[in-house]
Image (cartoon, rainbow, N blue to C red; front, top):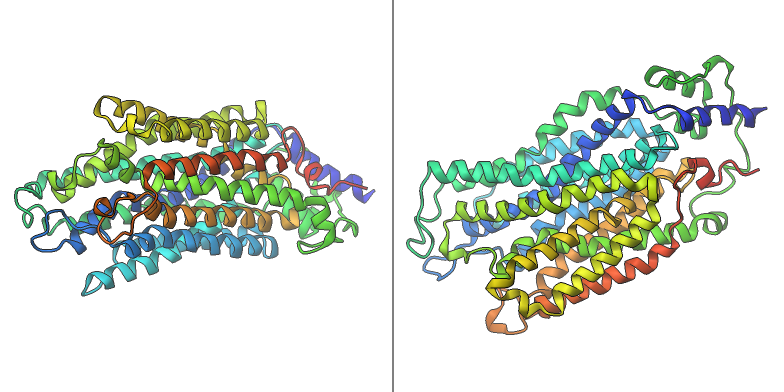
Length: 519
């Protein structure tokens, strides 16, 4: 009898018609991801400006750039914080409940975002140190949003459109990246018009106006705005019914919470759930978990790890790739704020034409063709296009062929988002038991961020020229851009192989996938 009553609660969620609250939940959870993406990727727009402001040497032929260790820290420290946050808040989401820790992550993001823009110090090292400190805690809050948003959306959604709903939350990341570019364009354009400055090659001192120090701070602090706007609504969300019923063992409360936000045919007074001793017989570090879900966890962690190496290498260092092929002018031919404007314009064009459409293609097709085919297809085309860029690399550096390089480069982004970038986020929220769902998603996401750290720290050094005379200031010789792109292609290929370990949750309930309904 208890099993039948338990099934009634879960079945009511699975068969509930798509309702207005589903879309409200997408916006509330999605705004967290909007902020996540804005904060993680906005730093890539302003690193060149930071180098000019704090590391330009008097009389140098070229404007200053961030030293290798500082650049790696500024770009990568938020990713380190994200990794820790994913593990910490993923575990707390299962222990304390999704809702209880959901608001903490958002408030941490808001405060750290504002503090990043207020970074201070009497010397460049002091400014960079405080910036890195605040960006670590910003990443920590962002990390918590990954497992909690995915888990909450998967547990609210019905069986038919669950994949699209979770993917739609993640797709807000595309708008965050796009908005970071648009804000950078607007702010840099306004300051460039208000404070005219000559190129560095004409007058090195006058090319950097004092007001440029406000530009990067405004860009970074703007990320707090969307998070603040959704904080109140996030606090009003009830605990997910699946957590309340399956983990907290309070079916009456679960039914009551459901009836407040969803139109479902279930009377809370008629529902009772007895704890199923078999379903709670194993924890994360047990042989039974390894037997049931060990390969699944290996699949979700390895694919996310491999994908993020390639994705963050491409995304954080687009400006370096575009400069190498000559799509962006030489730094000395521009003033400091103009350089930020042109970097933001180039990266925003890529985001608009490939990143954002790729996310929403996934939303449109994930429940039609499934997670597994989309992930396999994405890795396959990323591998093909990366090799197409890398093998004839010299051909693409010639001026008549640069547009062709940008088109192929854009296609790798399109298939990363209409592919593993979305599916690696969706699947871990669907295939693990409710009491371990947030933890396992956090572990999978943390593996991804470990890959992102490898990409952020490693690509800076690897992409340097093999000729010591042609490397950026302070960098040792690397393996060159061509070999770096070949390496990313190989990584994508291995991602395709490890995808074979990932199950297909399409059309199945969460309990079917996790085995919680097994007798």
